[in-house]
Length: 420
Image 1 (cartoon, rainbow, N blue to C red):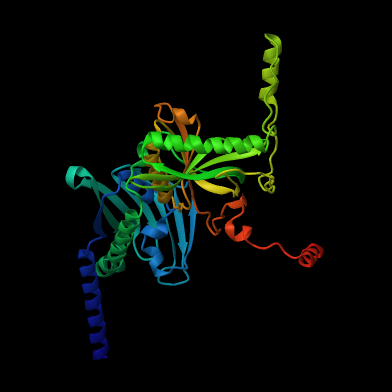
Image 2 (cartoon, rainbow, N blue to C red; image 1 turned 90 degrees about the vertical axis):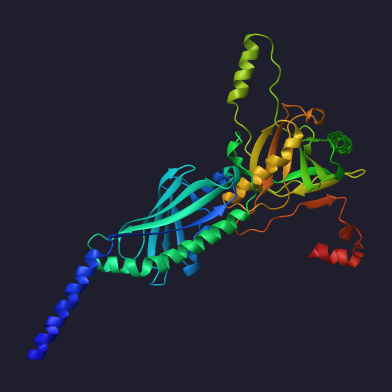
């Protein structure tokens, strides 16, 4: 009996010590680490205020690459949320939600994750640093409250720094590496803004050319190749189906290599122009009818018509596939287009759209006016469609050399193919 009493007393002493020590442990814990980047504040803000690239900057996915991630709410900003679910018991299920954004200062996430504690937050703070304040120090801080949960206080003391702190370090390393892949251009000051658009498949005439990196030489090369295209259009009774495009192949220090591309259609098959009406009431009535007339319905999935085109000189007839593009616009002299292309690419990468193929511009005015202050352009960069291969243009005339050199099938082979 004495031994039992001694054992009970010992247990009570241990429990008392546990409670007393627990009460003296902190009721809340924080852990933080920092990293520095030379990317613009707009890039840092946009990446961390959205879950689009969460896998690329957060260490959570490292614990279970097969975990399920589900976003909800707006694409970015306050209210955007991400729920995660893992089959691994140590990870479990939880949620990150953006609760506060002060652009250029901080972004606060509310965390609902397994483990003890409440009021869990992950805060990213930004501070200008470096020469001329061109760099940004990013500080990631995790906070949790335990209140009078003594087990939570012990857990916070033992594990927050070693586990959460390690994840913060890994995440900041991933974030730094991600930022390094994005061009160092501040697109936030580009007033026309950006968007993702879908371009339909098109028939085009194109010429590949190059010129010295001089405005007059580039304009002359464009003009000469456009004359070839106009000549082929006239010969084959075709017309332009949209603005001329300039596709950048190589933008070197001395040479600019590019394609001159023009969408085409059969002459007279474009949208009907309203007939000229008489003066006064008749003219107003005709304009009113034109305004309310429904636009023709075009099936985006309809196969692209193939033309019989007799090409000349360097002109090639091809069919461009439908494509998804990052798009913006620009008003100003054409030498400024190189910078706008970089802005479009940086904006697309921040939002998880992988640029592919080559950028191009639509010239909304004449070539002779491309150096004017009021010259207008649309700027595009094709982006990868998730889960799909990037389709290639189909050259129809002249045939690629490997097809043109192929001998025609013998008569009996042709008949067999026709029968099949």
